[in-house]
Length: 308
Image 1: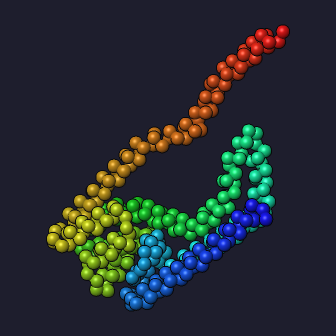
Image 2: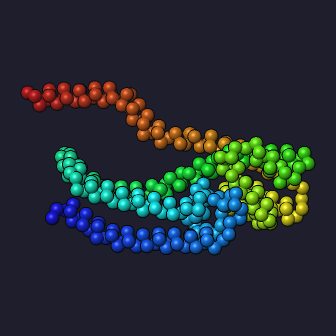
C-alpha cells in the first residue's frame, strides 16, 4: 500500500467513529430543540413562525442571524452534516486521483529541495478542505448575522429621531412606534424585531420584560444602551420624550466618533498593501537600473582580471 492509501485508510478509520458521534450529538440536539419548542405554546398565530420560544444556544444564534423558522435548527444541522459528507467525499476523490502525486512531483522538481518544505501542506490540503467545507453553513450564518447588525446600526439613528420627534409631539411610545413601523420597510431587521416587541405587548407581556427580550433578540451594543435607557425611564417614571431625544443625540455622537476613528485608522490599514504591493515595484523601478549597472561593471572586472 502506498502512503496516500494508508493515510486515507487511517482517515476513514478515525473519521467514522467521530462522524457517528457527531451525528448522534446532532440528533440529540435536534430532539432537545423540538421538546423545548413543543413545551411552549404559540404566543400569536400571526407570528407563530417568528416569535421565539425557549431555545437552545444554537436556536438563539440562528434567530439573531435572521433564520427564524421553527425548523431552522434542523435545517442548519442537516446542512452541516451534508456539507461534511460532501467534504469527506471530495477529499477522498482528491486522494484517489493523481492530483497529489503530480503536485508532489512539481514540488520535488524545484531546485535546491525548496519544494520539499511544502510537501506536508500538499498532503494535508484535502484535510483542510474538509474543515473549510464543513464550516461553510456556520460561515454563511455568521455573515448573515454581520449584515443584520450593520442594517440595524444604519436604521437605529433615524428610528430614534422619529420616535423622539413623535414623543415630543405628544404621542405615547406605543403610538409613536406604530407610526414609525408604518413608514419602515418590513424586510429591515430592526422593523422585524420591533414588530415582535409589539406582538408581545399585545399578548399581555410586561413592558420591561418585553424590552429585555427585545434586547436579547437584537443583541447589538448600541441598541442595548437604548433599551437600558427605556427600561430606566419606565421604572422611574421619567419623561419619555427627553429620554428618546437624549438617546438620539448620544447615538448620533457615537456614530460621529466611530466615523472619525475609522477615518484615522485608514492610513494604518494602507501600510500593509503599500509595503506588499507598491513598495517592491518602486524599489525595482528605482534601484533596478543601478543594480544592473553594478552587475555589468563587476562582470567586466572579473573578465578582465581572470580572462587573460
